[in-house]
Length: 277
Image 1 (cartoon, helix red, strand yellow):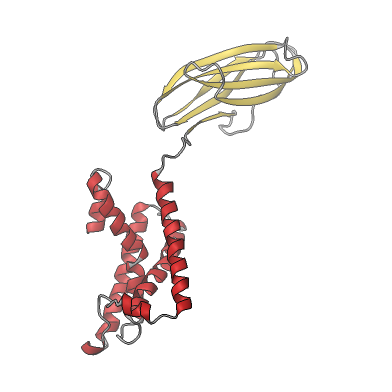
Image 2 (image 1 turned 30 degrees about the horizontal axis):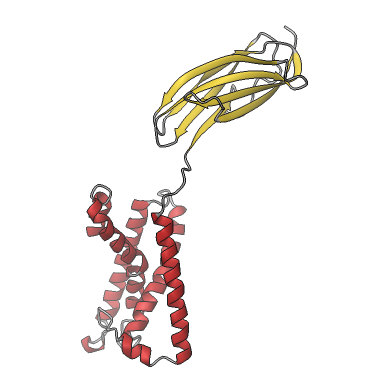
């Protein structure tokens, strides 16, 4: 119940974010494995406290990726709610199995619910070589943790973009007018999708250029816009133009500009062989 409440309120209440992180880490990295080891080793002599904690973490690391793969292949896919629900169901199933296994044993033979940890005694009993290995592992874990903190706290570069595409007569990226006549009206479906997390204004220019003499045969055939799109908004509409002259190997360039930029932000090209009128 607490996990569901934190999922619902965590984004709106900043003070709950650390608690949500802590509870989420426990639910992913410890509780599933703890439930499984409690079901597999219910007797108090099966494992000591340190071994139970380590096994709980290790089993959780194995169970969680398997759950993610299973969810990805289901109709619900891998998402926040599907993953949280799947994790809770696994914990309930394994916890129920652990309760059933423990019910078969006398009370004095049951493993404690909270593992009894004696880290100082455990450390003193370790050989010197194992102590060195654990120190190296702890140092490596610290470096990894520090790296993760830096990666998730430093601002990331802007990876937003705008989708710009042209569709043919069938509404697909095919069946374009490849052999038109000069002066005939041509049409494609222009698509713009604003994925830049802010409101953007766009305009489109369509240029015709003869590949064998681009300096003298370079003409603006039509313009469209401006179009103002909100974040995530999609625009699809017909775009019409006509080829100004007859020639083979004519390049039609669709240029997308943002606001008042002089340089195109996105460019699409179409090659045509233009016949006589």
